Image (cartoon, rainbow, N blue to C red; front, side):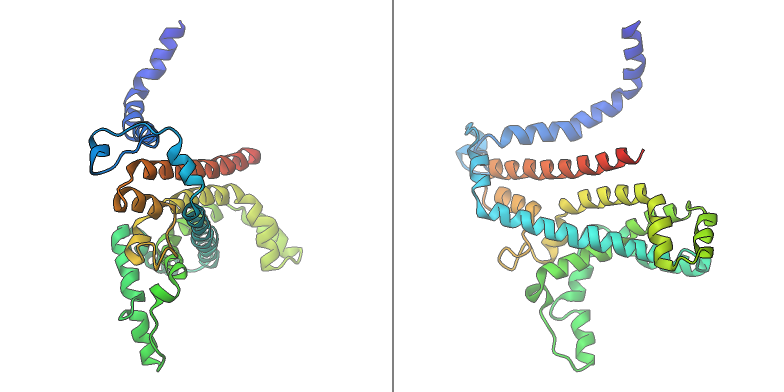
Length: 289
């Protein structure tokens, strides 16, 4: 009886489990194995890597570059996702909630257009806007102001703004959907009681959509922690290492400095950080049930 029940559950799930094993669990397990070796792209270690135990991890946690990159990853994630995309997406959703349909559609098209672009194309668009001969400096020149090398003088601000521009649409769509489910009678009752706009939002709307807020924060945080292409195109982690977040440190270690084993160790640390964020958000969601 038990075997039959397991079989009825396992057979329809088998294709999905196979795909998860091949494309999710498989690469993670392989990276875990490689992180305990001195694997490289060239030389003897490329064909016959040696087992080095915890050497890569010992080196990792004594490397000042790791802590610098981890801090930059936190700054980039909080600035562009938690504050930037999340708050701007909420603001746009609230401001357009009761506007005319054509206006909501027009604003939605403008915001979503950046989101639907491939990440590489969006990165080049931001680069064309911010580089020395880009659109922003041409606008400043028209106002009689001196041009600036924004990607050199304020690189972290540049990549944060670029990611906010590209990713805000997701938060906007999540909050537009959740705001449409807020009962209007509760908002109207608060209005009759004399609550202002901010108090109505804080005490009525926000508690109702709190699960949507937590879900959105979890998804955009996980996406931003592992972001690579946008930063690589704009600054390649520079100047120096001022925008070298953990994904770029992993790439440089593995492919620029030919240390695949060390890069794999960094990738597992990055995976662990993302997993911790996911657990925290998931625990918060369960507490809401």
